[in-house]
Image (cartoon, rainbow, N blue to C red; front, side, top):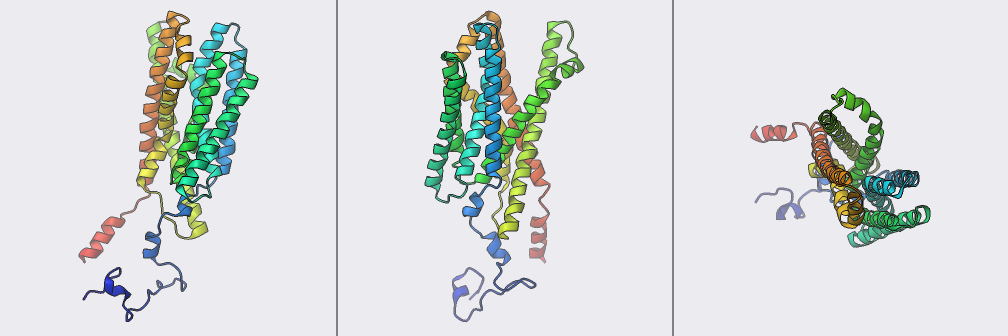
Length: 340
């Protein structure tokens, strides 16, 4: 009768206990134990969650402040409506990231899935209520302010619910990648005019539109590359940190890297869904100002969707390529050993 490990005869009294590997101390886990380690509480731990939460809250506050400054500096109410509709996507994305990051920090040590999800939603709710109160206290009291406050609160709650996922490391990588991509987009705005000239923007309207399209594609490509790189670096750092602390940890597999890399684009597309549902009144009001505003709002909506798709695919591909470069020819070596 075969006495392979894991068979019924492997537990017979005459079988010796599993011996430690040569060169390893007695009682240390063997390779089989490491590979079979279940995904427990350590797998759910996302390192740096508190720092990520502070940075995300700071970014949300900065977006709310810049939006308020732009609205209050408008010379007329019509201009304020247009600026509010233009700034709303950035605020919503920042609220999604802040809700997810704060919920991640609040639930990082919780093990039970149900309790973790409820606590994550509660943390997102607190972030959303705080942001809504700040908007209502500092913005002018009108329908535009209520739209910004309501959609921001809803986005923070949705972000908090996302943090209730079992593998918090993927959520942490997703939030870090989205935050990095959004910071890059703001910094990239300073290079729009020089790039437009570089891409051939001239005196004709068609040349300006063509140059703007290339500038937008460049921004989306670079944002996707940054999102994928940051997602990979976060997950790789989380793995190394867990190995130093615990010695053995179940590693995030390639679907986790795929989701984290694509996360920035996914949140951009989710932002568009939230805007078109919760912020529909503001968008319609801005589009009704004039025929030019209607064309502009339609073009902006299409551009945001295209940008989200580009960031999604480029970020996912970047994270997967970087993860694939870390894989060795282990499967080939195992096959050669079995054949011999």
